[in-house]
Image 1 (tube, rainbow, N blue to C red):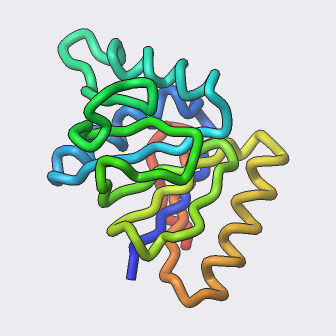
Image 2 (cartoon, rainbow, N blue to C red):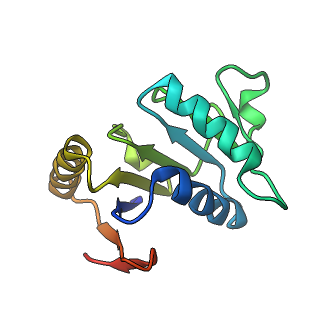
Length: 149
């Protein structure tokens, strides 16, 4: 069964947090797919990942690129998984309907956005009722993560 992690952002934005979590996944040898609600957000994170650090970048592609199956990180607005990722990030209210197809599902949501918070609560209940083991990480004022459940 998949590991399912909820990341409750309270002290920083997705743009500040997502690249580090993606990099940790890559260090484990996993491929990653990140699902966005809009093309605008996908495009913004696309630019961010190329420039997120002064000393490195995160190689990635999207449905706008060729060789999608070879991308270590794939950015999408749909439920596709062309690079056969082991980890799926659902951000900003997007949903994963097939968590069993991944080693890990990461649901990231902004705790200050009522819609994202409501979606995360709904997803938590749905996935828990399906028998999945869930973990919630909440961001603390020092921007570190604390396991809540």
